[in-house]
Image 1 (cartoon, rainbow, N blue to C red):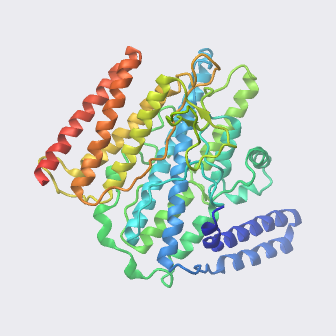
Image 2 (cartoon, helix red, strand yellow; image 1 turned 30 degrees about the vertical axis):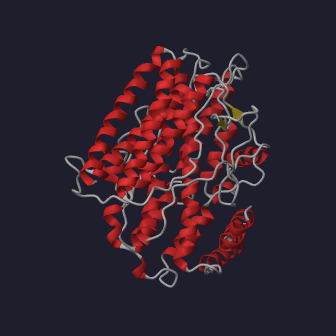
Image 3 (cartoon, rainbow, N blue to C red; image 1 turned 180 degrees about the vertical axis):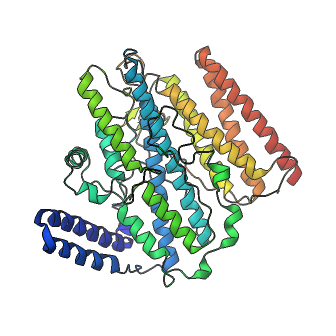
Length: 503
């Protein structure tokens, strides 16, 4: 662990220890029973709830909350990508067409996991709203295959969906009371995860500290909360796309009623910030109040786990629900001696699969670039005010938000192509997968014109990759690639018009 994280996370460690103690007491109370066990539990619980969080040296209250929100943003970002990769891996020719129930079940799982990933995107965006409200730096980064703090549930790993990987997702999202309770399934999940991960975590302690600090006026004064940032924040009517209360994204009927339910919450006060973080905690990582209308990520992943376990027991090892896609796929750097080193933050002792198939490499480069474009568009949206600040007949904020969603659809299309391509040429039976390479920077330049020029630069770089792919890939892919080129030309034309208006 990095020493700066170790020094600055003392309060979280203490809270995690408190929660571990409370879990032990819960188990003991269940075993001992009667008034004695219950009284011990209640006494310890009161002490734990009253324990005040001390802000470490080198911080004031607002700065420390900002630090913790940055950690939370990275967790939301990392989980979202791992869930997307798992969903992309599902299906394939190895799944028999008959009986159809298997394909239908797998398609339903994919829809549920994609819905959870959409909700993680809502969490990620809502955390930026909290940071914006505090006047703090936004944070769109993520660690590259990280294991830096005890609040990443497990090391970042892009991998196909299996019972083992699914167990990690259940564990990460589970309430500590369930993990430490008597449920045999909880013991099974914990056993699977600890065989693969040395020291797994869930992030309930992080949310508990955040919620305690952000509602305390002695930590963050009322004057810190900037209601005038509201026009710059993300809002559901812009970002939700109708994903509320299960109204969209559940055509297969695999999700429980009420899901997916994307939370994008603009904020104007301390209470708004507290309620937003509490809603995020309840929907996913620290769910303690399960409701039928808004089932947690934990519940949905656990449902898939039990269904997959039953399917495997029924069909045996004849086939798997997911393609044999790459684990932590990467594209080697081009160097003169033909050797390559893992990129910064990626360790050689972890399983990693190099993409050497030239066609898959081309798609991988395009995927990485469009992933960077998505993050740049998202970053840019938080400095554009809503309303009628137009350039010609186009609202800059509307254009940026629409472009962000366009890249979400592009990433899914490119990933769908990659998981059907061999990882290597002529050897093995493993498929490629989207690399999700961390961009070298997500910092946009100063000045609105320069930000738009940055988008134009990436469109230009993308055009070269697309043209190379058109020349090297089967004609079945050309319709999508040519359509992407045409869409980029239209966006480039709008950007050029905006630049000329504002020059």
